[in-house]
Image (tube, rainbow, N blue to C red; front, side, top):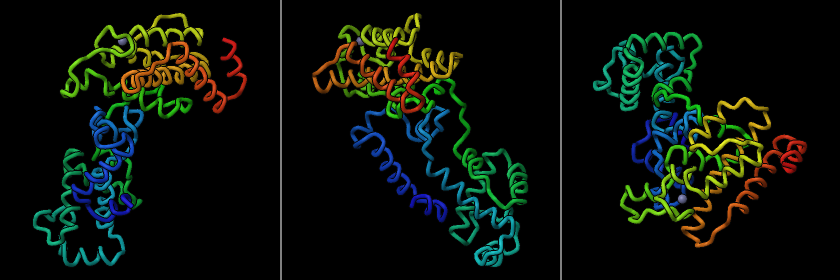
Length: 319
Ligand SMILES: [Zn+2]
């Protein structure tokens, strides 16, 4: 429904805010839970997965992209009654680049012309925009993804995200690992910055202040868990920080299945550490390193079995 209306008219800002609020609540939970996520919707969530986001389309930029198709239709003299009416009564024989948006008599064209001007600003100049439309006029088709990128902005690809993009990684593990890598989890230090919690103490080791950096993996509890996960995979090196672990995996040149196991195991470790932290904070219960290690091994074996074959799983179980 949203995609249909995005292609018809410029959505009011209030409507866009309401849709984004509904999407936020679907992803994170209730409004109070959304406030616990330190992850900007427009700047982070709406980026591509390879850029560290969750690949959700930003509505306003997508809305402008779809509306710019009307401008291309006018530009290419598309045979339609609305275009013919626009030429006669709105543009009055002016070129589509010459009519000023503020003096336009049609409210919908006024908005489209403002989008045209914004597009020209974003590509650098009106001449550059005209050159792009000239190249698109031959096919008469607007390259939606390219235009969306122009409105939404270009963002660099992040190398550390690569291990989390592997299809072997459980999606909910990838989400928590991405939030952790962005330091966006509701750790006590993040809550302290918002004045929500006053005492900062790690619930896993009860010895140090809690932060994403501490949980992954300066905390003795999480360090011990990851160390045992690495030993299970036959890795003998020590534990690094979260970002360094992800970078190391992104640059890993081992066999395909070893790399898959490592990606799946690291994401599962991050997920179960966060789950254990929440269990201790909210439920008062706790699980030991041995139990968490068994859960991580189980998840990795199930994923490997479903995505590859039983040979790899039998090798993992014998390690
Ligand atoms: Zn700790």
